[in-house]
Amino acid sequence: MLAFEARSIRQVEAFTRTCIPRWSTIFHSCYSDSTHNKSKLAPLQERRMIDKVKIFAKAGDGGNGCTSFRRSRQESKGIPDGGGGGIGGDVILECSRRVWDFSGLKRHLIAERGGHGSSKNKIGTRGADKVVRVPIGTVLHLVSGDIPSVVKTQSSADLDPWEVPGVLVGDHSDPRDGSISNVTTQENVNAIDPTGCSASETSKANVEKSVKSTHIASTNAFSQLSSSNGTPEFGSEDIGEKQDILNNVAELTEEGQQLIIARGGEGGLGNISIYRDSRKPMTTKAEASQPITNLQDADSVNLSSGLPGSETVLILELKCIADVSFVGMPNAGKSTLLGAISRAKPAVGHYAFTTLRPNLGNMNYDDMSITVADIPGLIKGAHQNRGLGHAFLRHIERTKVLAYVVDVAAALPGRKGISPWEQLKDLILELEYHLDGLSNRPSLIVANKIDEEGAEEVYEELKRRIQGVPIFPVSAVLEEGIPELKAGLRMLVNGETSCTLCLDQILLD
Ligand SMILES: Nc1nc2c(ncn2[C@@H]2O[C@H](COP(=O)(O)OP(=O)(O)OP(=O)(O)O)[C@@H](O)[C@H]2O)c(=O)[nH]1
Image (cartoon, rainbow, N blue to C red; front, side, top):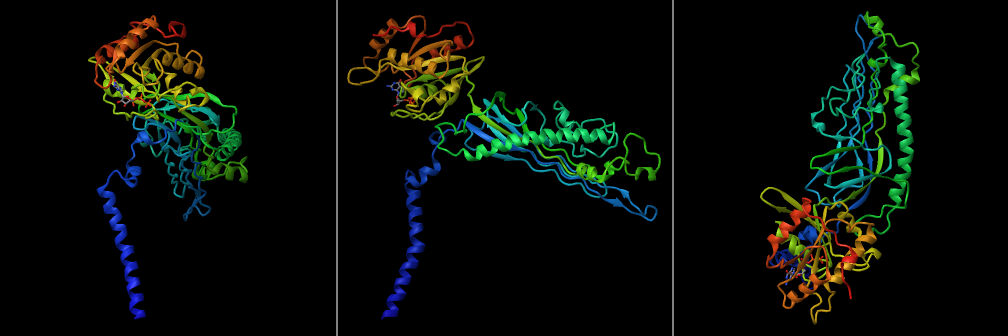
């Protein structure tokens, strides 16, 4: 009897283990709105936007050169035939439309090291580049390391694999010309110099010195990077304490632009290169195999080891590039308006702060198109971090035209909202708190929700209280007044009219 009970308990346990998970799967597939599925399928809009990050980039070290001798019956001592090491891979930022923010970006970007040289004069392979995508409008601030100043236009896939240092005697060209035609800097000039090994030594020593000094700086910054793990500010990461930062060293503004932020180290020399005196043309085989007299063993060991790849610590900041920015209080209808004038499909909700990151849309005309950004809602005190704070206002810094979107129905009786003229005052103040003169650019006002009962009277009152700036009555939800608004925005973007909204143009109570 007891044995029977124990067996049935085991059967029930097995049944529970096998069937219950299957039932839960069926349950979730029937109810697609269940929290289980929702978290997986949550739209991008619901994710927190990361628009400021600190990254550490380390390029690949150069591969070591090889010391090897080919022996034959005639050459019992052997002829040097060790190939040079390959160049380390670069760390490259590539500008892409497909990326919205830095949430998918790894904070440590490390490129592959170059392959080591081997006998029979085989050169090491080039280390693979680390190419990462960043959004359009990425601005770079340098914390430590070399300034990334080169926009690469040629893919590393086009590299000639045979363009490696230390292979050809008396090669005057930069070995990396094949990859980056316009990036020849003193540091990148091949360690093999037509003037001989001493020159190459000097060059190599200089490079080593510069890399070392950079290395110290970046190590410090790197430790700060690792230690800065406090609570991140909304919309951007905590980038640690204030330090000497070179602001705006570069920016990526066009699709496909590439920027090398850390350069791969040069490969070490193979003994085939070290043992030849490049100053004299070789006349005999025996001469070719003679070591250079003033080259010490230690030096040749030094020359054969690949140089370390450079290290850089950067702060990446995203500043959207748009012709027009919609600025307004939460719930003013900015996202609805963006959907009405473009094909963008931003999330719309009847609650405040539906928009958590700027949305971009293209407003098309017959002969041109204008980029419009919907900036998350601002409230009074945003500069003191109320609401979503004012971190998003940096996206307005590059905007040509401001379109203030106000809800004309907000202060209708029974709504307890803020009147449109008060909304405008608060918006201008918040812009100015963020950056002096930010509101000082061509602007217009969109009087949204004109379809609501009683909104017409508020609109008339708004016209009476605002001077010198065009006001467009619009119903974003019914798509009314959109052609007129599009024409007005076009004129402002093209500079055909220019009017700026200042505080003294608003008549307040
Ligand atoms: N009656 C009326 N309602 C509108 C109009 N435009 C937007 N709404 C409604 O207003 C609410 C807020 O719209 P959103 O487009 O999400 O507003 P938002 O300014 O983007 O809001 P945040 O994301 O909080 O900044 C939604 O319920 C919309 O349906 C309009 O023209 N008329």
